[in-house]
Image (cartoon, rainbow, N blue to C red; front, side, top):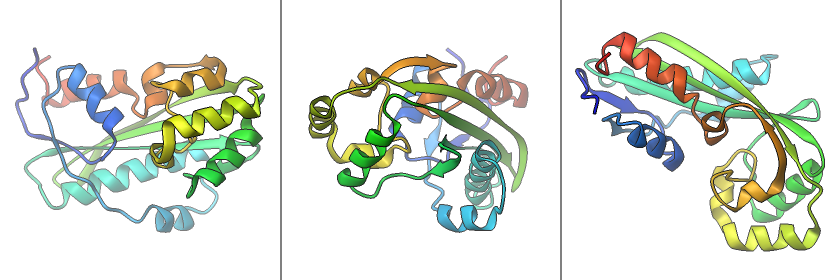
Length: 200
């Protein structure tokens, strides 16, 4: 089991990201960054969705790093591109239903970014993209899915969780499973080793 040589803070409240790091044997604390994502998006102009995911991840890492300069801070964020636009988290289950109906039978792109900061400076960032294709599921399945998953879906940018019943929404996923869950895990682990946060 790798032991941390420096404190690591995950600047995210995501249960999926916590589980990925814990299962990989990474020791860390959690501190939610509390950045204004809407303001960052509004100020980001014409950034493409992948670059926006990186900017959000960096903002979260920096917000926590400035308060604790002795630690390494891992920020992460995810954006979804569909039909030529950027999709944000649904604010209600009705909105989630309409979004999933629009995406069924079609493809979208999910971008997961991560950034590592220390002493108030970003020292690394990266992003990975997955191509997702939903199957043409029925309205009855969609209603059952929303009833089973409930308001937990409002915390997910695509209104689905692939690690649960949401797997049945899809017919094909081209890319890394961890990226879908919200973290480009392999490059993150490599960077943590390079930075000395994990034993090489």
